[in-house]
Amino acid sequence: MDKIHFPYRSASHLAFLHVAAQSGAWEEHGLDVEYDAYISSEDAHKFVADGSVEFVGGNHVSTYGARMRGDQWLYLGQTVSWLDHRLVVRADSGIDGVSDLKEKVVAIRGNHPGLNTWLFLKQHGLDQDRGDVTLERIRGAATWEMVRDGDADAALVNPPADLFAQRAGLKVIDVDPLPMVWFTTMSSGRKFVDGHPDIVERFLKGACQGIAYFKTHRQESIQIIQDRYKTDGDLDLEAATRLWESISKILSPKPYASFQAVGNVYELAKRKDPAAAQVEPTSLWDYHHLRRIDDSGFIDSLYQT
Image 1 (cartoon, rainbow, N blue to C red):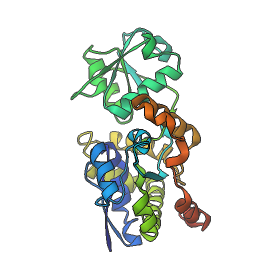
Image 2 (cartoon, rainbow, N blue to C red):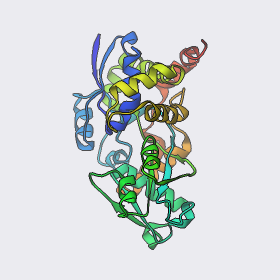
Image 3 (tube, rainbow, N blue to C red):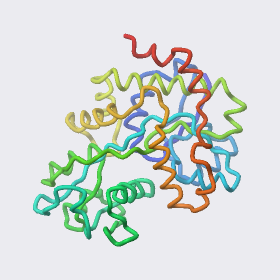
Image 4 (cartoon, rainbow, N blue to C red):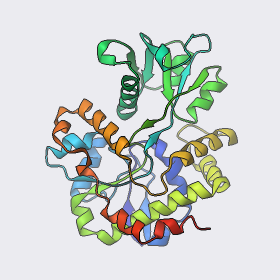
């Protein structure tokens, strides 16, 4: 059994990772995957480069600019290509859709999530740089709590936060999903990938098998989420089910990122670091291991029963 480190960049990934690990998917391929550990963006770049970490579940934005400084980060597979979010506002706000957010304050948090909101609003005609909307970064409280308490007019949230907001009396509005590279990515470095193709293939097979289990074993997956996923506190059955439904809907059976998702995350990378504009956006994506697995029929076989 080969020991593999696969730390996450956001604890929200654990809703999927707990299920994939508990399904035994990686163990079937001879891997003991240590997935339940956080890593910072800076440490991810450092430890992937020196080989002390084999794979990382995130770092979606910093990598493009880092490539111009010699970083050899590679994306090997992507679990989702859509951001399944909802708009939450106070019931008496008069806001019924995205267009009503003009000159309003939208709560954001984190680097990548905040950039997602910036891009989504810009693509819907509300440009922060023109002063169309104010993005207010917060710490500590959930963004929907800022809306509830009157410190922001709106927030874009992912399940199960939409359910928590609804229970608190807020209005939840369906909006268009955003093509985006986020959530769990199978990332590594060129040196490790070139030197350990067998481990890379087994790791990707385990990831694909974990995705299939998540999508096809509803009750078992919901139970694992309820038992082990504590990022959003102790989830009752309704909240755990809402989270499973949201993730299952957007999980890609064949974990290739869509061109639209790569294009959008590239816009975030350029926003964060102008050096990213000098990098071809698909140059960090290496699918040849995943394609070999796919061409063998392995992924299709996971959904035949």
